[in-house]
Length: 143
Image 1 (cartoon, rainbow, N blue to C red):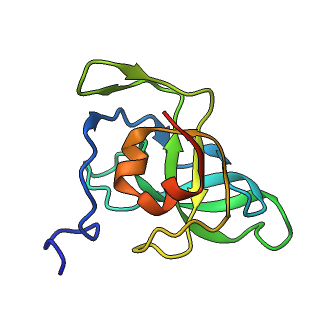
Image 2: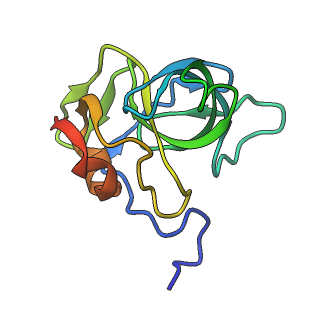
């Protein structure tokens, strides 16, 4: 059963996520799928002012093109979930959280959010583990 909204009934994120990554930005790929660097080409479910460039933050579903990596993945389009951003975002308890890099995880299908790789390098925030439990299973550390 769907919730009647776009996005497939994902749980809301309990934080004020600042949207800091533009379409066209290059970000790291944090899993071991073979991709190293990807370019953001679209933000899923973005509704904004006409002519405004879409932006995304932690927990958003995006579409990326792999720019560096294995020959199997390079120049191909994948759905991905943004798991880290350098810009600090605020949790409801007042704590601000920022990471060293901007990173995403490639996923197989857009609705099931099964990660393409078998391990995620680096930490992920708790907001991701609550919203995407399949990604949290293969994460190295949850902050």
